[in-house]
Length: 247
Image (cartoon, rainbow, N blue to C red; front, side):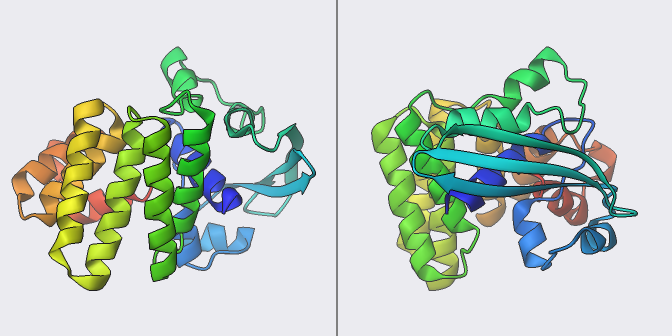
């Protein structure tokens, strides 16, 4: 699940760049998009960044290709090589690659290389958890994700983003079982994340989702408006849903 988790975390970081409009990895999967033609049709994409992952012993290699979605022409290629267990370096090199030739502010550049933790083992567990949640419709995947996020928190108790991942997994468990214990666990995880870092966008989304799921709609709209930077005069369920897929 490293590949799926790394894809989702990189996509989420790219979505935070103001000059980019990025389809989420989950949305790509749910719409069964497997070609650049389908990406153009489903999302109106004009560029597609394709990647393949190869691992040989202790080394990982990611081959990147930037494609013109209109005609399929390959615009640029690149290769990233790093120790397979160094997810920090792999992710940083992907997001900082020259492929998109982005002009970034200091703040945007910093956010692309922020991981939410300095503990590599915690990040390792977190990325795997994110990968398993890409197939949340499988109960066993949600169980594994809960375990992985819990391990991430054990490795780094200050890891707020791992708490948001745990909350998301608990919500999936609650949706499948309707057992209130999982909703309560999700609420506690959201509170823990907020106590650790209430300014983190992922935490703000988790808090807004908690308000939405518990019927506090006005607070949810305020929260979504804040983190998604939506026009206060044009906030509705559709705009919120569309922007959430990019986080």
